[in-house]
Length: 372
Ligand SMILES: Nc1nc2c(ncn2[C@@H]2O[C@H](COP(=O)(O)OP(=O)(O)OP(=O)(O)O)[C@@H](O)[C@H]2O)c(=O)[nH]1
Ligand SMILES: [Mg+2]
Image (cartoon, rainbow, N blue to C red; front, top):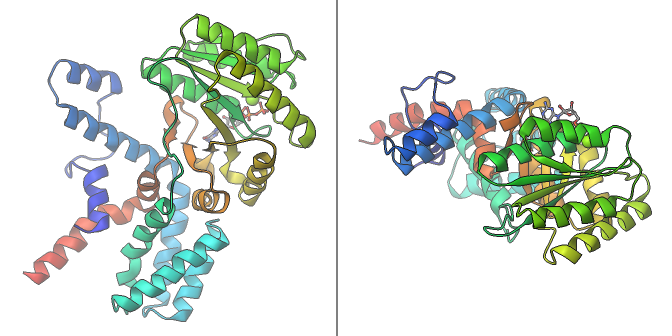
């Protein structure tokens, strides 16, 4: 089965279903599952489709830009030659894919075109998409999944500079884990910025989870110690910790974060289970420099890439993974509570090329018919 067709089966299983008309909610589907009205397979299929919608909607700007440019490219260059590859490189670089990744991708496309004897650019379309997933997933010992314990407390430390979407992402994460039936608590570790504590408390109320805090200006490590102790005592499953992102003073930040980790480990030796760095996708190359700077001061186990819905340069996802060696674990696809989604290369590529995926059947079926 072709790659695009496989994506189509995964994300658009019911061909007659029109997008946006699916009236089912998570609650009603979960009930239907509990009542035995639908099977686990049907539930999972439905869930995957919903995730597909989210990625498709969140990546709309990037998809439009990318597909327009690729279409133009294919119209302008009909035969596969060096001019075409150079123009393709420009398109990818302008989508923030990152120089090294672009070079790796186009080198492999050159090779693929040669061995498969592909001479028309239109026939290379699907290979471009497939290679993007392949390159993302390659040489990869990096754990993509979130390290949440089945039993016992999991501590998630959230770091990042001001304004990138830390608090919002913490709120959305809390919502996600609460929906999954977990007992969630939050720690207001940004005691530095005025208003940061009350902002987190508002999210706590909105989602319905407890927030452990102290007065503004107090020692963040003391807040964390309180919070981890309370979370352990109350038998919480997940504790998500906010921090202040004062990157302009790296020495201070390093001391503060290592002190925070030390006190957390006094209570839960294997914590933090995740140290998530939040980056704003709309800041492009600047997000990459922030990540490099954070890597110098602390361990980062994953990236939360926010505001992907606000940029047409969604290629930044590929650059982050390949140029920093840190997996993107969550992406922010909008302002709704359920718009923070777990990242997977296939979901992402589906969002970027959903229209091409929708067209896949006709093209592929046509080819199959031709062969018969
Ligand atoms: N469209 C969109 N907006 C987002 C997303 N994530 C966060 N935002 C917005 O980004 C703005 C800043 O988010 P905050 O969560 O306050 O950022 P922060 O990092 O906590 O900022 P400080 O507390 O100042 O350090 C808010 O207006 C959010 O609604 C996203 O995925 N998509
Ligand atoms: Mg905040």
